[in-house]
Amino acid sequence: MTDTPEISALRREYVAAGLHRHDMLADPLDQFRGWMHSALEAHPDDATSMTLATADADGWPSARIVLLKRFDSEGFCWFTDFRSEKGVQLEQNPKAELMFYWRGLERQVRVRGRVERLPYNDGETYFHQRPRGSQLSAAASTQSHAVDHRATLEQRVSELDQAYAGEVIPCPETWGGYCLIPHQYEFWQGRENRLHDRFRYTLVDGIWQLERLQP
Image (cartoon, rainbow, N blue to C red; front, side):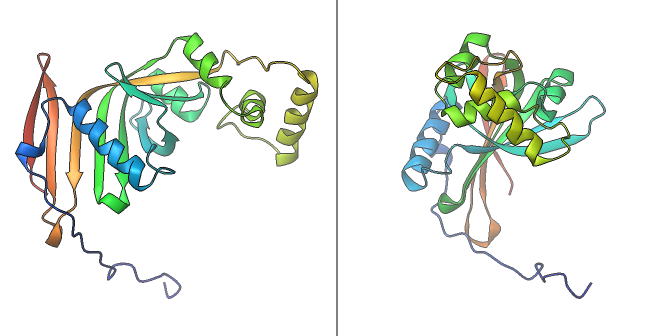
């Protein structure tokens, strides 16, 4: 294939400082909080972008970028249309993994766990914090479903905007939040010569166990 770019020879060197066991906090949430703070300082526009990986009942995986909207002792939260591909898959198989990649810091974090829907009120509150245009798009679209033309979507948005002119747009019952409740974290720090540092936390009988992984 002569028109295929040659990518096998591309190289990138990692030069960040190392990650040692004594650097790792006892609670992975505290460790994540510190890394997120650094990411927000370095690249605030992209720090909360995360890959959400799900799988359907037959085991077929899918992944996409979503935005982290909250994280605390309850878990990691995001919002979407329940009828979307991810929503359908999470209904079939409520297990998922999140992955954060902060290129400028040469770091990534993986968080694995089970997923639960947030209460409707949580979704409604966040829905009304969004710009009106985002509310209209969410209410007019059946996410991940086929549509004949973009003009169809634009017409739905226009009609909805007129229907609620000067009024609050109601949050659809099909739209809301999810929360991933972690049982495993992995912190990865890029290192020179690909001898990366990796530490994994696993929840065992209510206690976080920490181990170093080979790169």
